[in-house]
Amino acid sequence: MLMTINTIKCINPHSNNASDSVFLLIQADANRPRRHPLVGSVSMSPGSTMPLPTNGYQIAFDYGVVVTVWNHDMFQMVNAPDFLFNLAVMNTSASWSGDMSNYNKAEYYCDYTISP
Figure 1: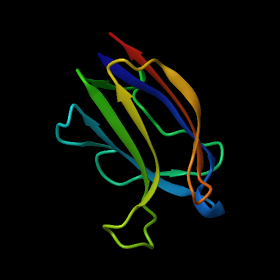
Figure 2 (figure 1 turned 120 degrees about the horizontal axis):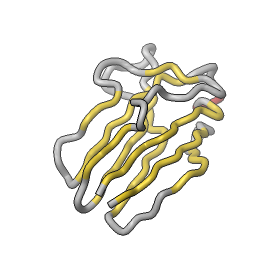
Figure 3 (figure 1 turned 135 degrees about the vertical axis):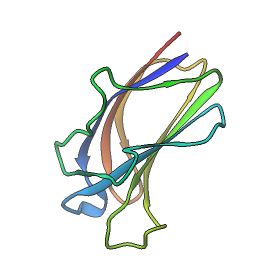
């Protein structure tokens, strides 16, 4: 199966900050996590969209995928990013789009597709 992340768009950064420093950890079938971007993070303010490959960020999997979205503001400890949200997909899941939010008021729009 193939999960394609098409869009991650900031609606409201966490705790009403001006922006979040966002990176993804992607883990398919309990294998080693992958990171996007590989180094650093993406500054995201309201209305900004995370840069992804032209055809979306694609993850091949057999059983399931967990995508965790983190905020790594540089004024914080290096090993202590803030959790924004996660997407959990099983091999029976359908494509989805909608808003995700968390306890500290971060809100993001996400869109992904699942294909065989």
